[in-house]
Length: 134
Ligand SMILES: [Zn+2]
Image (cartoon, rainbow, N blue to C red; front, side, top):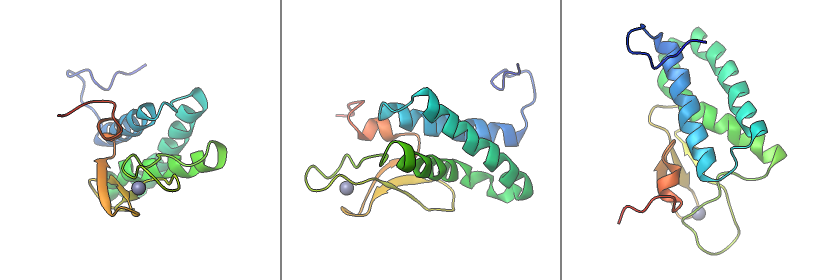
């Protein structure tokens, strides 16, 4: 098993990108307490697909985290339901946040209903009450 965090070993930028994307999405899944084994495998499946994608188009490396988040969101919609649920709108129909930009760097979760940016991908825990910043 390789350890991408070992500072003495040079890390392939692609591996680092994929590792970061996986960690960010898993952190968001954990904030919603849906990091079950099958959900983790959804993330892994997405990372495998995006590895191929970014190998074809290295310039897209900065977009990988947002794409993995959207892949997992789509997979969850079929098996578990909407994710992540909007933590901003206290009333009305429960609805999911969406990743913006769909294809771009610095992806974040937005609520289109309230028209607000909720959190960066990977920082959902802070926005859903997991951590107090006050
Ligand atoms: Zn909302």
